Length: 314
Image (cartoon, rainbow, N blue to C red; front, top):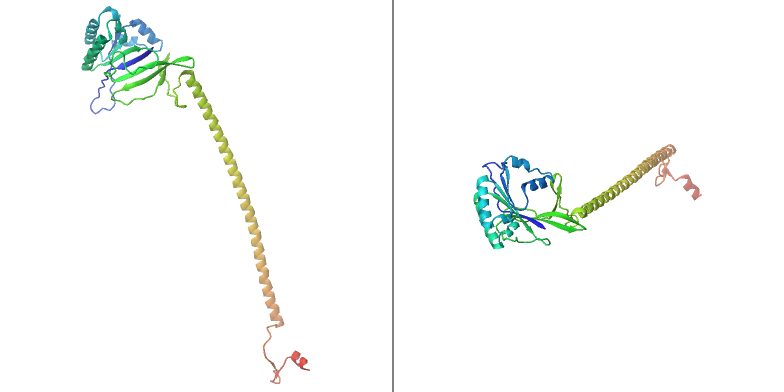
């Protein structure tokens, strides 16, 4: 079975100049047509929710009756009377499909419209629960109230991989932003737990399929992280090896540069010494460059040819 909650009206009051909503005690009146108050209290305790304390504080009241006990007009009259006496801020009708035993669909639709109009005029939040057939979710309600409500929440079971899992999604929510995701929820001993939407593979996974896929995703992420760490360490090792080779090459170049500089300085010094020695020998031997023309005899004052030239003439 698919269980759809239809919220008719939500009235939230704000004080002028105050941005945060002021928490006020809410009085809730529950019209139950299928289960007794004791059954509802026991069932809620099984998921860790104690509604008995709210009953004891006078904030929660149950009006339980069988649908076949009265006709639709009498049900509507009695509901109006209970609402006037308790003066609730929230009204729950669970479920409206049970009223089918007291009348036809057209009469039920007319009754619900009158009830919704009355509660709307009082500024009361009303929640209507309706049971629909299994299979694909319906886009309309059986009693034609989907166009009258502000928010439509659909709860249904998904049969997948040999198990059934509970899901929730918002069909519409008039005047407010809302999620379009189908989310899994769990009934635990500590209340209702909404499971985070799994979006890893682009599919809506629930139950053990979601757990298995999440485990596989974590394992894949761990493997990628380890591979990235290995690649990072390899890169750092190669970088250090390259820096070591560059440093060794630089050290070898510096050593060669020093050795070559010493050789260049030594050759320069040798060339300087050779030039100085040659100049000194030239001065000692008076081996200046030979002069052109005859050599003058200082004693006779006459020019004479060099001995070598005289010898050649003889």
